[in-house]
Amino acid sequence: MSGCLEREAVVIETRGDQARVHADRPAACGACKARGACGAQLLDRHRGARGVWVRNAIGAHAGEAVVVSVPTGALLGGALAVYLLPLAGLLGGALLADAGLGAGTPGTVASAAAGLVAGLLAARRLLQRRRSPTGQLSLRRPDSA
Image (tube, rainbow, N blue to C red; front, side, top):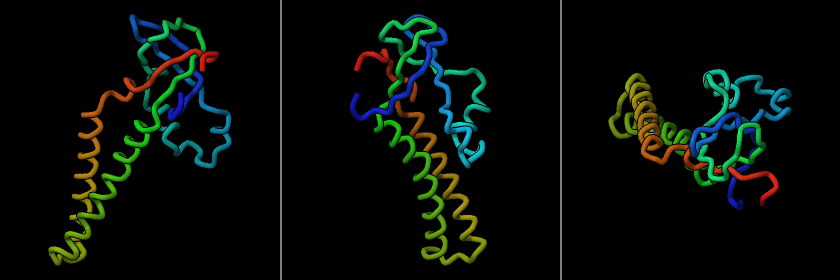
């Protein structure tokens, strides 16, 4: 699929038209300098059950190798919301308090913190309104292009 990020995975189980798939982390992760501080490591620690549920339009069975695809637009949109909205809130709050309201340092810091929280809440609301992230994932067999 053009415009998608793809990853090989294995179907762990199926239920109706859903399949739970799991992709092993690449070997390069063990040599990464982040040493557990990256998002993949943090998600693995807090995720609990391994794998993610995906619509099983191809009828894959447990133990079958598949390729999971996510549209790059969905990934980039989520990344922009998660990173840019809080940053914009933080900077906007600080600039508003400093330049617009003439607040001193404590007021600027408080406004920056309030802007950060507002940006985080806006990102959360935006991502909740979007279609489920796993609903944008698709499966295909490795041999089909």
